[in-house]
Image 1 (tube, rainbow, N blue to C red):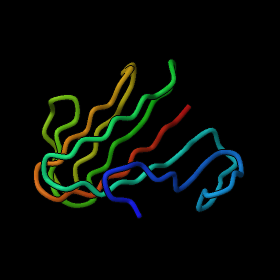
Image 2: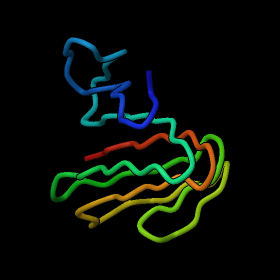
Image 3: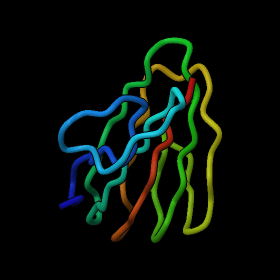
Image 4: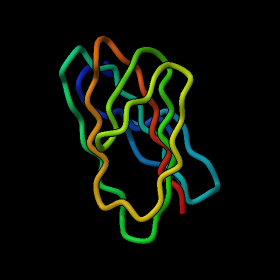
Amino acid sequence: MLVHKWVKLVNFYLILHTVTFVHQDASVFASTLDDGISVTHWPAQGRHGWVQVVNGRIRLNGLILKEGDGADISHEARLEITAEGLAEILVFDLA
């Protein structure tokens, strides 16, 4: 269940409870959020990422993104994502 929390879908090493793994230094997380609910992602220092709004509308560190929008992430210590209505999101954590 993806509601109100992160679920790790892809990882660069095989662990239990990961849907799949890749031979790259990358992880993919997914979440479904109800209106006003927030989740936080803490990228490690020096990592980059991408936030993709699959459905709905979110506020990412104050920036509004709608369905289909994506945001390139670099040099951010914290990603605070808050749903504005029902939203589904993906976060790609990349080297």
